[in-house]
Amino acid sequence: MKYSSEFFNETFPHLLLISFFYSFGVQVYRKNYAATISPRSSHIELASKIWNFTMCVFSICGTIATWPIILQLVNGDTIQLDKTWFLLYVFSKPLELIDTMFLILKHKPISTLHWTHHLITMLYTWYATQFDPTFFLLFCFLNYVVHSVMYGYYFIQSKNRYFSQCVTILQMIQFVLGLIWVFVCHAKVESKIWFITLFMYSYYLVMFGLFFYQKYIHKPLMCCMCHKFLAITKCHRCQNKCCHLCLSETGCTLCTKMQKLS
Image (cartoon, rainbow, N blue to C red; front, side, top):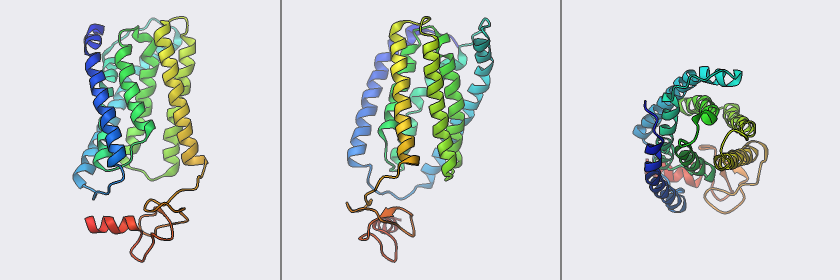
C-alpha cells in the first residue's frame, strides 16, 4: 500500500465536513431522541455483533503485524517499516463512527466521551500522516491491542462488571504509555504535532479517568428514569433504578412502555 501524505492533505477538508455532520447529528440525537424507547431489533443486534467481531479480528491482526516493528523500536534497531497496517489504522478511524450509528439504532445514550473520542482520534490520525510515521507507531500498536480486547468485549456482550472495568483500565494504561512516549520523543518531533498529541492524550486520560471514577468508584444519588424523584429502589423486571411512583406489579413505567411497543 503506497503511502501518500498528499492524499491525506487533500482529503482532510472532506473529513472536516464529515466531522461537522457527525457532530451535528449526534447533538440532534442527544437532544431529541436519546430518551426515546424502541423495541429491540434482532437484525440490528446481529449486525452489531458482526461489526464488533470484524473489528476485533482486524485489531488482533493489526496487533500481530505491528508487534515486530515495536520490538525494533524499543530495542533501538533500524526499523523496517511496512506502512500497510499503519495506513489501515488511519483508514479505520472514519469507519469507527459506525459505533455511534449502532448506539443510535439501538436508542442508547451517546456520552460526550464517546463521540469526542471518535471525532478527535479520526481527525488527529488523518492529520498526523503528513509527519514522520515512526512517532505514531507505538500509538498505532497500543490502539490495536486495546481494540482487540474492547471489541471482543462488545462482541460477547458480557455483563461482568469486572471485565468492563478491565477494559477501561486498559484504555487508561494506553493513554499513560502514550503520554510517556510523547515526552520521550519531545526532541524528535515537530513542536506542533507534539503539543497536539500531548493535549489529545491528556484529554483522553482525564475523561476516561472521570468515567471510571463516576461509574465504578463514586456512587452518586440517581434520579428515576421516568420521573424527577430520587431513585430509591430497583425495578424487579428491568433492574432500572426507580422512584416510588414508577413501580407496579407489572414493573416500572419504562417496562410498561416497552411491553406495549413489543
